[in-house]
Image (tube, rainbow, N blue to C red):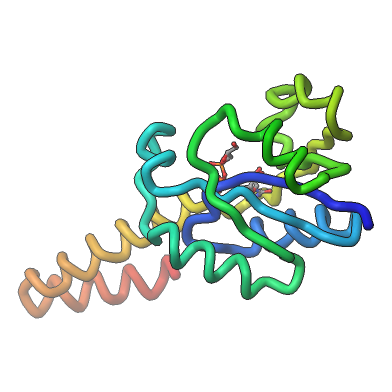
Length: 155
Ligand code: C2G
């Protein structure tokens, strides 16, 4: 039984996350995830939209995931790897080199990220959509027509 372990926030779960989990799971038989708690994300300076309990529930619903445990700090990985009997530690390549110190315990791999999608891009898009909606609701009729037409063209 080959166990693969990874870590992340997985906020606003998207196809970039799915593709990474699929590739990681294909390296072994079992994929387990250390999912960053809300408190740890505060330490990371990340504000999540979806609370930990729901992000865990979503990850567990993913066909590639066998188990999800809380990631509370940067230092727990060695203990997790031993507890989970992990054979492979994998992350997206934005983390390349950051976890090489674990290579005495486990095979460390960095896989290509999926370009064109990220939680930040989703948040930025939603902020833009909200702004244009609030513009439309506050504008006069001709303004609304102009924005609606412009919005239609840019969609
Ligand atoms: N990822 C990806 N493609 C994307 C977006 C993310 O492959 N388009 C990968 C990242 O490289 C990471 C994983 O998905 O391996 C989770 O990404 P985040 O939720 O942003 O996790 P992060 O904040 O990087 O936390 O201790 C490690 C940290 O918990 C990692």
